[in-house]
Structures are given as structure tokens and as C-alpha cells.
Image (cartoon, rainbow, N blue to C red):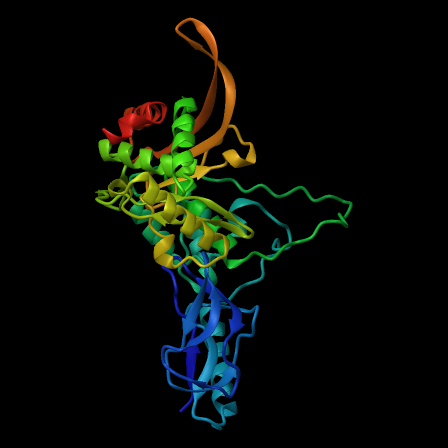
Length: 407
């Protein structure tokens, strides 16, 4: 008997997947656990294993096409089985359900583009509830079809944020130019880009960010790293040192190594530090697990493997999810300093800038020092200003005096 093969959630944040390549063609025999196709999720390209035994009778989503969680991507059954009647019944059922569940009245102003709220999919009732309660739609996680925001999403958001006063966000129509721009083009959003936009918008709107900045002298560290690299076959990266020093600072300041929950603050027991890595179509954060129990050489080796896998889009979900602290280093791009958005479930992220030679005053004398500017973004619900400042002070001392990190 024919049965649907559905798009399954391959990661906790996945809402839909894009078929990159089918490993089987129509008419091929398939077995439970056998690779059926490759699916691009919000963070990586993963193999989708067949959930059934039988024959692949029909591919419903071609290569390059996308399907939401729970939607059919193929049909399996017995070899030679006629599925035309089955497909007709499924199509009729889907059309009827859509007509009953998702009525969409025409808005007379629909053709006028707006910024903020109107760019987010929401049911009319959910949009009205959000407007009445002054809830910014970008901060709400939609659970309806294709991420659509529905009534229960607004209710959940209000329940989770009932102690936080929300300010209304006014919509402002975009200025419409009388002259059409002929050189512009619209680039379709990848699933990864959609999720990045959704998660970072939610983080920025729900977590009250504040920022602490400092300048760190890294000449001693760079000299120590140079000497180590001369005697080691493995060349240690600056990022490996930063991960290690952050892990040691987090041990001293468990309040920074925490996460906001609906009715509590979670103190993380294991230090899992993510390092933001740029990809062609977005950003991913490979995670070095249990950094507090590892040495710099071990951290460096793991980082190199993870970054290589990230750049080739081969990271597994457990290799990029749930960092408890994050580092974003844009120094290689010539950026002197910047601020970063917190990466949940953590409550802090360290933005690292370029190392530059600058004149400094040491014991009333001017000297040239290698200076690195860093900015710590903190969630004020979890980390008070003095706590964040104390963490950054200790981190600065360890980087400027590397021996402190191993004492």
C-alpha cells in the first residue's frame, strides 16, 4: 500500500528543508535506514535516511525544491503499484484543509510594502492580538505552516514575557520612488538565511543587550604563541587561546555561564564555546565541547576540524548547536571593533577585533603595543553590569599575562 514519505525535522530549529540531491530515482528499491536524499536545513546539509522499506514510486519535491516539516516529499509502496488515485485523494485532502484552515482575505493596502511587522507571516487574529498587546512580531517564534505566527504563539510570548513591558513598534511605509530601479534584483532567501534572521531578531528583541568594551595588550601572548609554534608541528591559532582563556574566565564567573529560562536562570555545568564562522550563504557556530577540561593544543585541533567541516557544510547538528558562550572574531577582515548579537541559549558573546600596533603609555613612557579591542554583549536579565565587567577584567588579565590562565 502506498504511503507518504514526509519531511522530518533534522534539527531542533528546522522549519523546512531544501532537497539538494536525490540518491534514489523513481522505481528504485529503498530500505529503512538507507540514504534517500540530501537535505539542506537551517545550518547544514544532511543525509535523509529512508524511514521505510519498499519502492520509491514518486518524487514529489524535485532537487532544489523545499518542503515544510510534515509535508510529503515522496511516495513509497510496492513495485508497480498504481498511485494516481492515491495522489488525487491526497491533493484533494490538502486543498480542502488549506481552504478551511488558512483563509486569507485580501487587504486593500497589501500592495504597499511596509517595514517591521508586515514582513512577518501571521494570521489575522494573531496580528490583531500582537497589535493590541504591543508585541513586535519579529520577536515571536511562529509554529504554524512555513513559520506562520498563530494565536497560540502570541499567547505563549505574552506568558513568557509578562514581566517585561513592551513598547509598540510603529509601522512606517517605505518611500516609493517614482522612477523604477532597473538594476535591482531580489535574491530568494535560503532556509539558513531565514532561520538566522528569525533567531537573531528574536534574540535582539527579547534579550536586553548591553555592551562592555576594553582594549587588550596582546604582545606577550603573540610572542609566547610564536615560540610555541616554532617548537610544535601543530601551529596554534589565536582563536584557540581565546577559547581557552574564555573557558577559564567562565569558571571564575558562573553567572556569565548561564541562560535565561521562562521561570529560572540555568547555570551550565559544561563549558561549550562556539566560534562564529562565515559561510557563503550565512553564518554557523561550530562548538568545542567541554573546553574547561581541555588544553590549548587539543582545543586548536578540534577547532581546525570543526571549521573545515563548517566551510564544507558538513557539520552535524551536535557540532553546532547549544553553545553556552560564543566568540565572534572579525579581526581577519580588518575590523577594529564591533558588537555582536547574543547566541541563545547562552547569555553572552565576545566580539573580537583586529590586532593593531598602537602607542600606549607604560610607566609614563610611550611604547608601541599590539592592541586588540573586544566587546562583550550581555543579557541584562541574567548578567548584571558589575558581573560582566568583572568577567571581562579577568579575561583581559589572562590574555595580557597568559601564565595566569594555567594557575
